[in-house]
Amino acid sequence: MLRVQNVAIAYGAEPILENIDLEVKAGEFASLIGPSGSGKTSILRAVTSLLRPQSGMIELDVPRNEVGFLFQDDALLPWRTARQNVALGLRIRNVAMEEAEARAEQWLSSLGLAGFGDRYPRQLSGGQRKRVAIAQVLALRPRLLLMDEPFASLDAIVRTRITQELLGWVERERLTVLLVTHDLEEAISASDVVYVLSQGPRATIRSRHEVKIARPRNVLETRRHPFFGSLLRRLWDELSGESPPVDYAL
Amino acid sequence: MKIRLNSPTFRRSAALVLLLVLWESFSQLGWLDPFYAPPPSRVAKVMVSLFGDGEIWPHLEATFSAAIIGLLAGLAVGIILGFGAALMPIVAELLEPVMIVLNAIPRVILAPLFVIWLGIDLASKVALALILVAVLIFFAVYSGIKEVDQRLVERVLTLGGGRRVLIREVYVPSVTAWVMGNLKVAVGFAFTGAVVGEFVASSRGLGYLLQFAQSTYNAALTIALIVLIMAFVLVLFALSERLERRLLRWRYT
Image 1 (cartoon, helix red, strand yellow):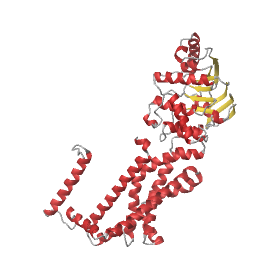
Image 2 (tube, chains in turn red, orange; image 1 turned 90 degrees about the vertical axis):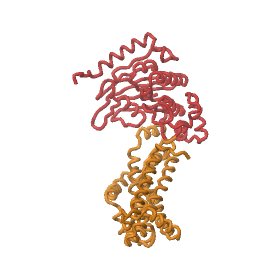
Image 3 (cartoon, one colour; image 1 turned 60 degrees about the vertical axis):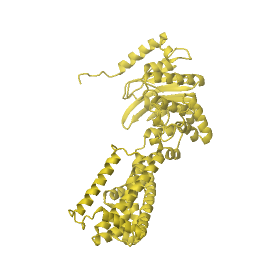
Image 4 (tube, chains in turn purple, cyan; image 1 turned 90 degrees about the horizontal axis):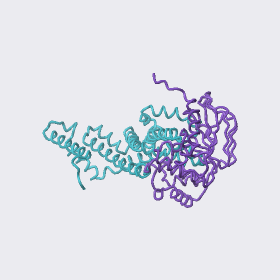
């Protein structure tokens, strides 16, 4: 579904990523973890053409309009209501206004936001805004979903609940997902494959781990699976070795 | 209607009334020279006579026409040029230095030139109001687009939107917020342009009347006209605030 081959990314003269190779097969949930500032987000931006790689190749087996991107910030249009925000992508795809808004309303209902369609983003809580952003992306029925630490700003309970809802949806629809996160537990509990990025600059993929836990999964119960703990320790050790030591004397 | 004694509006109104009472009292007691500071009662009488004999209407019409036409034309020109400069680098390259210079100088100095080019009638006043408003709005629109939230731009792009969708869904609404934020200043500028234009050379308008009042040392008429202009500008401020609340209801809901 998605192949990133030998990709290098630089900001101006400063190299960020080198020799990035990763593959996400159809129906697979892959996560990309790594130290802060290693360039995880840049890989997603390159896949969505928001950023042009310096070299290498990015192959997609789906048309661009079947790729959904869930950002770290909800980034909803503040002047549009929740319903209009969800309908936006459909309107861009020339779906008639009435139909787009009706479908948007269904999506809001299915994500627990029935009756919130007329509210503006500033009238919604962080969790509700995140659900609107999810509805906006899922309403387009993407086959490949790219997520950039989408729930980082939410508190633990809301985060777990939304992750579970989204995971359920992904499993039912057999979506292909590439998730960027710094949360190791989130990565393991949701993914089939976890890629680990080394510390930048010139970060590269240093390892790939398969998550051998059966689906469907429950985010909380998965954490009690014996494999979960052993993979968590391995990832922890890898990333601890990557992170620069903190000089407390400063 | 309930009057709250501790509200700022009440305190401001009370202070204004107190000032007028003191001013009137000092004039009646002979402590203020009515030649320089005529009492409020005399200013009110002048105001009533201006409206009573109908003398003021042609002047109001002239000033209002110049200010409103200049305001609308200035908004249109500022918005078009601002969009052009923000979206087309070549336009920005040509326009930005001109606008920076026009913004740096007191633009009312262009009034005599407009009188030479366009005559003493409406056109020269409209031109001055237009240039005052257009430069202000140009920068509001130009900065509005330049400083638009890039996350919103990227969101629309990843949803499959192109340039047209970006303009409709992101740039226009964000620029509307900037323009509405500057609308009150623009209203003030439009009246400044109209009145100063009339002050320089005209045969009608509040600026013309002001010039007449000044040349005849008629302080009561001068104050009456200043109060009149302030009152009309305040009414326009209130209208622009209502328009802002309507257009930016997402911000006030």
